[in-house]
Image (cartoon, rainbow, N blue to C red; front, side, top):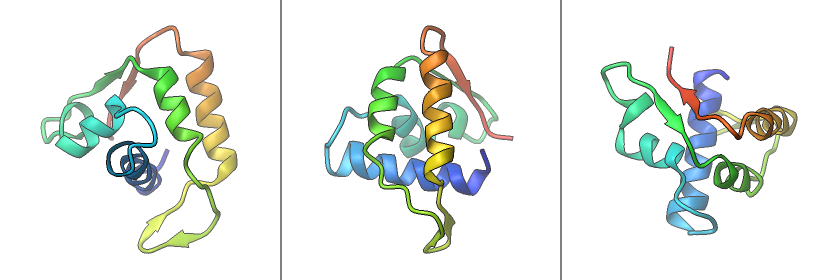
Length: 99
């Protein structure tokens, strides 16, 4: 996933999880919001363990193709592929890191 797409989805998940409280405050959003794990300045990674909650949060996001503000939106097909990946790998911790 490209960095701008990740930033867009992280911002959307933050809105759903933290601001609007429509789902649980998932680890991915927490680490992104607090600059922990994968989002710190030391190049660490996060191991996602709340995969079912992450999938639920991803399903709440409104995916529209095109550009919103200065972020690149994630298209619905890409979100479905991400959800599929998380589903088939939900039994293991998934490492998230930035390159």
